[in-house]
Image (cartoon, rainbow, N blue to C red; front, top):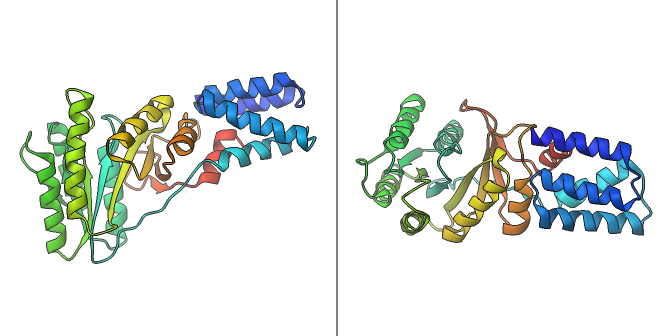
Amino acid sequence: MMKVSFAEKLKKLFGSKKTESEEFFEDLTDALIEGDIGAKNAIQIVDELETKCREEKITDQEKISGLLKEIILSGVKEVSFKPEEGKVNVWMILGVNGVGKTTSVAKMAKLFKDKGNNVVMAASDTFRAAAVDQISMHGDRLGIRVVKHQMGSDPSAVVFDAADACRSSGGGIVLADTAGRLHNKENLVNELKKIDRVCSSKADEGCYKKILVIDATTGQNAVRQAEVFNEAVGVDAVILTKYDSTAKGGGVVTICRDLGIPVLYICTGEHYENISDFKSEKYVDEFLGR
């Protein structure tokens, strides 16, 4: 898998090339691109690294590796959100189909329920029968209320009713599962903008978040998805799914550096408990094989 091969390539690179040579830095740039960081950021990172190494006359492998970590880490952002007590918090969960969006909603629902929050899940992907069935199943298993309408009904109306249900029970958090694919991108964007307006109007001030779920193994595809959703409605944070130490996680660096979007959680498996806070340093260490 890509992350292992990147870490191994880095190790091999340090072992076979003179660290002060131009070839070393060129090969390092190639390795970062293959690690899914993307050409622009790979070039910027290595340029900064090379400049510092030349200025400070650093040739020691461990010091260069540490410096590379510092440079990458400076652009990787983590964030933490928590629902405000006694208020209506609304989180719109975004993402294309197949990234584990609905499962991520269920994981967050359990996480917040276990912390004592009143949780309502909104089945706002009304275009896919399977999505409504799936979130209903999670609701039954977790003992969490799911607000749903008929298949094909207005997704915004589902969020509207879920927020009202949340308010009538003293506040809490609404987790709205949204559509990831319509007939075309324009339809999807228009639908999400409509849901966005309703979420914004129904949440208490400062209690509305837009969270994008991306598959950590999809590299630059994940970056493109982040660009589309961010342009459509603005994204406050991302959740990485299917993440482990062998996944192609380099796209996260680009999302953080270019779009300024931080990472909220990582999901590592199918169980409800397989969700944890994202830690920038741990992520970079794993990416570099440190």
